[in-house]
Image 1 (cartoon, rainbow, N blue to C red):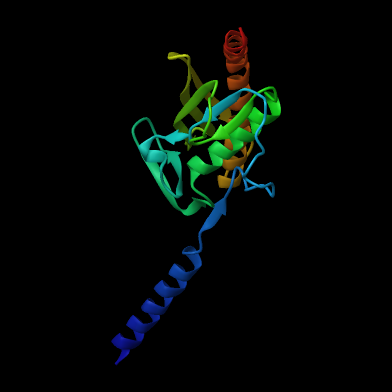
Image 2 (image 1 turned 180 degrees about the vertical axis):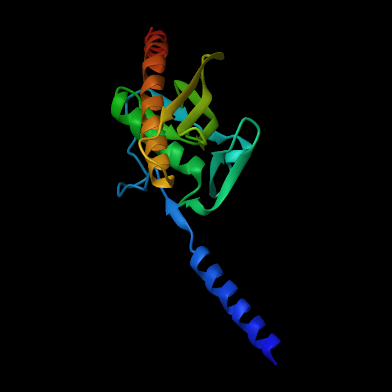
Length: 198
C-alpha cells in the first residue's frame, strides 16, 4: 500500500517542477511602434529594403546560445516575443530612416521606380559561453544592375550574466551594425542619386 503513495508523491513533485519550469520568458529587441505602417509617397529617391534573411539555425522562437566551437543550443524557456527577422527588419528600417532621411526607405515590394534595393543576411545573432554577443552577416545593395556588398562581424562583451543582458547587448550591437551600414551605404546612394538626376 505504500508504493502507490510514494508514486503519487513522486508524480506530484514532477508536476510541480514542470509547472514551475514551463513558464517561458519572452524578449524583444524592437517592439512595434505606434506609427502607422503606411507612409505617404515622397519625392525623395526610393530604396526598397527586403526582409532581413536569417541563417537557418537562427530561424527559431528560442534564443540561440553557442556552447563551444561546435555546439549551438536553442533555449526552450527564453524566447523571442516576435519573429527575429521581423524585429531586425523593423529596427533596421527605423535606423535607416533616421540616419539617412534624404532617401525614402520602404520594406518589401513597392510599386514605382526605386533607386536601389537593399538585402541583409544575418549569419550570427546569438550568445557565446565565453560571455559575448555575436552579430555577423552581410549586406548587398543593388542599383543600376550593379551589386555592392559589405560584411559585418562583431563580438560584444556582456556586462552581466543571463538572457536579459544578452538581449540588450544584441540590441545595442544591431544598432551599431546599422550605423556601420549607414556609413557604407551613403556614398553609394549619393552616387546613384547623382547619376539618376543627370
